[in-house]
Each structure stands twice: as structure tokens, then as C-alpha cells.
Length: 293
Image 1: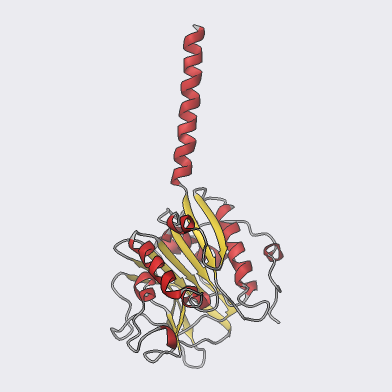
Image 2: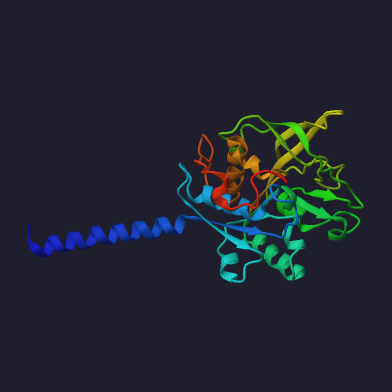
């Protein structure tokens, strides 16, 4: 082969590989995990360790390769981190934007992110708003961004937080992508009940899907929605009121459920068997304690 032609061919192959690499990088979804404040005892909540665990699972998945995840302890200082996020995941004691300094600025920025189509996910207590966070009618942007919330000691509604020794979590929308790869499971944890979904007799809005239910409390059971998602005009939201205990992250079905919800809100496809990741020892993520104290 003519040396000039050979060199040109080599150049074109390298150029194509370079463009493929750039394209692959551009297609990666950016997940921003924001850890809010927490005052719970060691072994419960463990929001920092939980944030690190989710980051590890998302970036080390066995079957999803197009995710990048980062953890911010508190509201990110770099505007670019917020502007680049495809979805934002909150974990902390109550909805962190209402707990962090600069609440109004944070909620305004979060609103602009939602308006451009950014997803939102809240884990356990991060789904929660308190009476001082909402007006008497219960209106709050989180209701629209995520499709519902846990309302604690609010004038319009009262969610119940109670630890159940055996709460059976049942998929309620098996055809939804978030329901892939996990099955009914039972856990000793604190799934909130009587969550709030809106002023229309607390019925889920048409664009909100119940993903999991549980018959609680045991003494007077009724079907309670414990995880849900919303498809907004732009963007998606996912709320799940577990886990309370750090040890609950060991449950493969619960973990796949949560990872599916995060990836779905980032507008990425969920594999048929759900988002899978081999979990190392929970101690790897440096909790204050592995068991509740």
C-alpha cells in the first residue's frame, strides 16, 4: 500500500475512534447526589454513607455504563455541577433544600433545573416536608416535581413514621421500567405511610404512578403507597420512603428498585433485569455504624 494512503487510513481510523469516544462521553448521564444534614443515631439514615453507596453502585453497575455520579455534602458551590445534572438525588433529614442555608435561592435554582427537564429523586426522609415548610393548603413545588411527599405535622396532612418489623413491599406497576429486576420483599424498616399526593382527596395525579405498596399498619392494614414516580411535561421524579436503617441497603431488591428510579429520572434505559451492581461490604462507605445504636 502506498505509504501516503496507509498513513491517511490510519489517521481516519484514529479520528473515528476519537469521535466515538467523545460521543460516548457526551451521552453519559450526570447524576448529582446531594447529602443534607442529619441528626439520627448511628446506623439509621447514615446519609453520607448512603450517598457514597449510591454513587458507587451507579458508577460500577454491571449492566449500565452510561452513568456518571458525584456526591455533594450540602448544596454544591459550583454552578456548573447543577447545570450539568441530568437528575439530582436528595438524601437527608427532611427535604434538604428546605433545611440548607439559602433556602429561597436553592429552591429557585432547583425550580429552573426542573423547568429544563432535570430529574429529581428523594430517598426516605428527604421526601419529607414539615408544617413550617408549607402553607395551610399544602402547596409546595416538591408536590409537582416529584408527584407527592411525606407531610409531617402539617396543617393539611400528617404522614406517619413508624418502624415495622416486617413490612412487605409489593410492586404495584409491573410494566413500568422502574419495576424491572426486583420482586416483592420484606424488610424491618420505617416505610412512611399516609403520604401526601395532592388536594384532590389525596389521590395520585394522572401523571403519577404508584410503584410499590405495603399493607400497613399490621393492626389495621390498608394499601399504602410507599414509592411513586411522576412524568412531568419536562423531566421526571421518583420518591421512595425507605430505607431508614443503613443495613437495609444490603437488600438486593430494594437497592435495584432505587437505582432503577435514579437512572429512569436521568432519562436512561433500564435493563430488563434492572440496574445491577455487586455490592461490597457496607463498611466500605464509612458509616458511623453498620447497625442502629
